[in-house]
Amino acid sequence: MSSFQNRTVFITGASRGIGKAIALRLAKEGANIVIAAKSVSEDPRLGGTIYTAAEEVEAAGGKSLAVQVDIRDETQIEAAVKLAVERFGGIDVLINNASAIQLTPTEQTESKRFDLMQSINVRGTFLMGKHCIPHLKKGKNPHIITLSPPINLDPKWLGGHIAYTITKYSMSMLALGWAAELKSAGVASNALWPRTTIDTAAVRNLLGGEALAKMSRTTDILADSVYYILSKSAAQCSGNTFVDEEVLAAEGITNLEKYSVVPGAQLYRDLFV
Picture 1 (cartoon, rainbow, N blue to C red):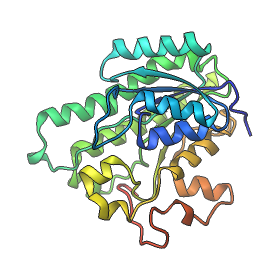
Picture 2 (tube, rainbow, N blue to C red):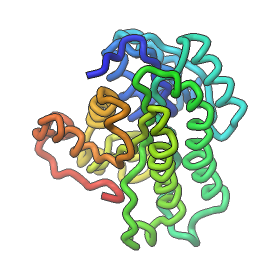
Picture 3 (cartoon, one colour):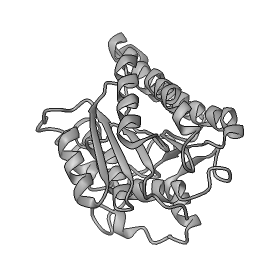
């Protein structure tokens, strides 16, 4: 397995939820973590800021850089990447975690929400790749992981919330496209998605509240999955749209009870799987 000592991991949306869980998991392995997110003051409904996440990263054993970034703004992306390279000497891993969600049919989707999902999920992810790739090409065992699903063209996934679905599939296409584009440069690119819902602020506040949270798994399952993907050789692990359970099963981990929010509870399948 590849060591994480002195490897720099740039994570979007890392102030809370899945992004922070990934940050803490890799910090335990000694990685340098760039916490790139918008939150500099705490929203009681969401919890956490880039600064509180940075403190937790340091406590977990990693080095941190907290930088305020709205990935809709290319100037902010460029500045954040420059800061990361100045602080840690380069970028070895990019985790595209930041994303916007709204599960509405066409008539109920306001144009501003459509534009928001396109600008964060698609344009923002693309621009993060664009500005990190020059540094990834010089990185140690360089990887890109994008939090997006396998592309399933079953009409039910398109018909229910087409505006959201097309942005998440676009993220997966970016992941697969980068795998091909960057193969000769030795940079891996994969997508990762959960089999079940994950207990996050989005689940609690937007999708199903406490009831759905109790039928979900913790963010740790994705954090562990990221760890195992990044531990593999970039030359040998690229071009996949992984599901978390499959990643863990390949490592011989099939008892996933520890990841359940409520042990023994019936789990709710996530979208697209």
